[in-house]
Length: 274
Image (cartoon, rainbow, N blue to C red; front, side, top):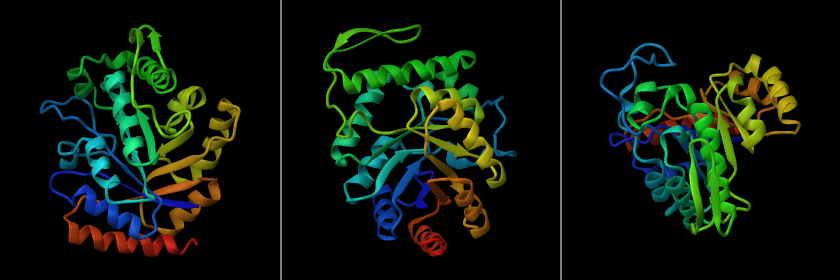
């Protein structure tokens, strides 16, 4: 099983270049970071984790800027969004950002995507929460067209453009792998548009049957990465036994010295599964 790190990069924690270097030096294969453009002060959407929304959600750096900073000081580390909120993102701009990061990193991008849970946040972007799933799917299809076609064209319910030139193209062919985040509600998206399932908040004992249902719907052996895993060997072993290809150990957002200490502990846990 592969091991990566998932975290929130903010203005109060370790800088992305220092983080990327430290994650790669400790033998992890990937770094996936969260995205929130902003958090409305008045919220109706309950936090999925329960209780008050942690401050890290308001303070995340732009993921593509942060990952470019990490790319500049690493050689092997896979760099990913966990997740990019594509229901809030312009698909033409996002396609260029993903392709540009893939180019400057030498083909090391994982494009983790999801539709999001914070209705007020997406409404500020002009997104109707009731249609965000259809919108996200259409934007993904448009981005794939922009990445793969010399003259890209798309006509849909939400996205509509006549033939355009859009460069650079991604280094990875046909495009960076799309990791679809979410629970069972995301299985149709995994089947139609995903290269992997990015499972979140799924207990180890529930993962194996969910993988079976997801792969049955997709009709193929879709790999599974589990996001935000605690550094508990029993939990990690449960995910390994359930068939996960990779677990992303969760790194709390802390200043550099404290982050390095936690990364050392996470690396020691991962070494138990070599």
